[in-house]
Length: 346
Ligand SMILES: [Mn+2]
Image 1: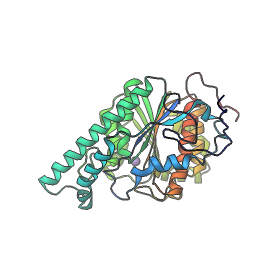
Image 2 (image 1 turned 60 degrees about the vertical axis):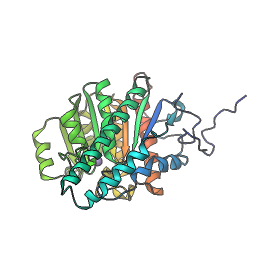
Image 3 (image 1 turned 135 degrees about the vertical axis):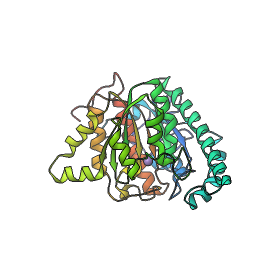
Image 4 (image 1 turned 180 degrees about the vertical axis):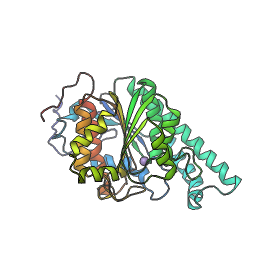
């Protein structure tokens, strides 16, 4: 007879295993799709190694979760990265790095290289959309782990196809609303712009923690009614004026429809929680603030269809925070599935 799984025992690694759990993608309710790709990362590099680093750090996460209960019971597992990913990453980074160093394309040859990188990203979008659709259609919760923020687009596209009218909770230091960046249509700095312009199935976007916003991005934020931004400046003043964080979270969450995809760029958090993210910015959400925001989302009858966690650095502390956040996101997503028991009162 097999020994029953003991959640209090030290976690052990396995090929598809996360958090030391015995599940595989065959029986896990939450399936992580790793996308180790960072070709358009404009500053610090290394987030392509985050899926492996997070898997390693996940062994240290306590499975009994004080916010969401026992998400491990439903199972969390990671599928292998697509075998084409390493070649895509190598080619796209080789082409993109010299152009990024020059601040954008200068010659026709550069522009041809940008087009090739964009073509690779379109292939990644199709792949990520395909995997997301695959797991959504089987009643699972897809979770993308990047890589840079460019890799989220395909997942959001698939979620919006399957759940038209879905909302996006977007945690980020940057608005990511640039109309292409440094020559790349599918840059990590353009992900939300591409969602806004190309995915009418996303009905509303709530962006939290923004503190690097270009003038053109600020204009778009003023002129679109599909994005509600809670900038770091606004949050700072509201808190200083005595508005409780919980009430601010309530306002953020109320601007979203029932079904939500969470796109979490780790740089939305205070950089002490993500020192090796690609483009760190001072300010941002404290861990407790992030936890309360997820709590408000989870407790207000929203249904978290899936989520992504991107721009996590691969060093130990970055991966520790990433693994903890992955477990919390999985826990809240599980507790908001139709028919799941509420955690009210925890
Ligand atoms: Mn971002």
